[in-house]
Image (cartoon, rainbow, N blue to C red):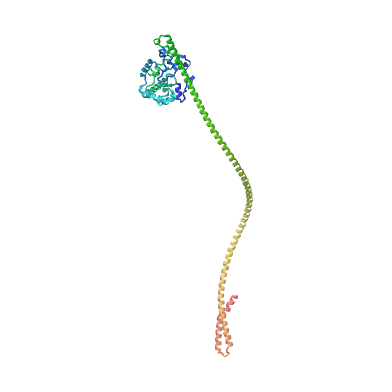
Length: 422
């Protein structure tokens, strides 16, 4: 039950039963009870003591080489029991096929780990499956033979299909046929006296054969355990070899990674040197930039002083501008007054121009009158210097004309000049 629960908890089932798991009552047994601990393959149960004791004396030595054979009497009994077995004949072939597919190591047994998935497919509770396993494992080996596996599958099938619970203990018709004739631990004391031959030597030989048979089973069990231990050790060695191979491959990978890291480190060193050169260049440029910044700051200070002086000049210019604006206002006022005076002067000039125009027109008239007077004078002169015998009538006429002109033109001209002088 402990191993079943461990298998259900996905823990590996040991290939060899450790000494700590062997029941205390079975750790130290007499040689007569060792035969019951030998694993029995399907169809080849160990021969019972009564059949060994009934063996004729001439075949007693050959029975060591045919320990798995049965006497004719026991074979008939097994065939009669197999007919009355609870597992139907129609289901045995199907269960045997499942057993052969499950027995991957071909040792004639299936472990709990191998049948776990098959049992779990029934969806039965784990405690019920553990009880069925305990019923089928009649020899408490932690493994099931072909018939024990068929019995377990039959009990599971009854529960799944018909709802029949497995019994608390196996009934006689449930015991596998190969185990019904197997003698129990104390069967040596239950042999009937009718099966003895009555010959002391033959009985002693039969007892010796039975003892040798039990010792043979014990040695076979020890050999199997040793082989299992060797296989277990071989598996451990193989696992250690696999671990060593994995460690070796891991070491090789680490070496490759180390080589890659070394190469990357060298590349990083080269990059570091380049970066240091770049850093030196940057520092030099920073110094140059600092010098430029200092010169720019000095220029800025000088420009600030220039700007301050310019601002002062601008202030003075603004004051001058205000003064000029005031003067401009005064000049504007003076200009306005001048404009008024100019308009007055223009008006006076216009009047004077009008008077000049009038004077010019009068002067023109005077000139015309003067021209006419000149003509008249010329005529007077020519008349006076001409013929003295002319008639006085022409002179009188000229005098009249001169009088008219004098009264008209010259007199008017004289008056005009007098007016201008005044």
